[in-house]
Image (cartoon, rainbow, N blue to C red; front, side, top):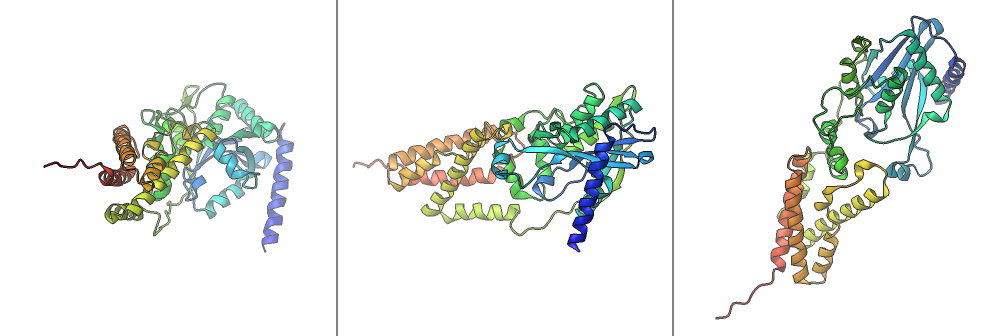
Length: 378
């Protein structure tokens, strides 16, 4: 059965590729429609934010094709290293709309459609540009979380066809990228925590660029072109309620239980293990900040909490050097105070706050244990 499905899929793909190659100079009919597709949120990390694609439907020419810029290949050599570094190549692909819709039906993700209300010559220009891209090196681009992704690339290609910066962000330009992203992780606690602490100062900039699918959808509804709305009223092609999987461990309760154990254990070994974990995370943040080309990971002030210098504190503690253990404990308490003040107006303040409190308890305990006692002379 699987072989039959695979053969049908390959056959459909070959037909589609043949069609696209043929259609590079094909004139669209007056009934052709070009629309922006916005796809619902998924539960895989790459689908948390939804997806954007372009649909071109022309019944007179038997065309119903979806173009999207969100394709990547897990089989790429050194995939993880390339993705981490920020030089992984994404590329544009085309698929029959039926296959595209079936995929999102299987994943139970909604699809919304907004038809572009543009003149025939601009439809043709966009159609030709998309087909040219699919069969050239232009289909490849280096993925960037905010600046170059499946949504921003669609904005760029449509704006190029419209001969201007027509599609711009409408709304939420006075809040940061971090604040915009934070709610998308609801129901995925540790992913929300992880992205909160690994992102640096770039995501604290005001979110003035369109970089998420539903930002584009909302902006299109408020965009005009040649004195009329750029898009028609949104049409729902598929409708599903997002289902967030239940997890016994991926929730705030396990997080709070672990931190409460560290505080209540009041144990030197537990304290050292906790500080060691923080320091190793900090070393990773520093290393990834220098290694990666992703600007979102640079200048990460969260290292004030996850300080690599905690390793030195642990070293002095193991060496029973009370003076320097005490000094480094006090130094990190100062880091913690500065970090808390800096974080207080950030979107991830409350999710990190329990860890700040735990670190404060542990560092105070370390400082008290190692403070040099002054002998009392009677």
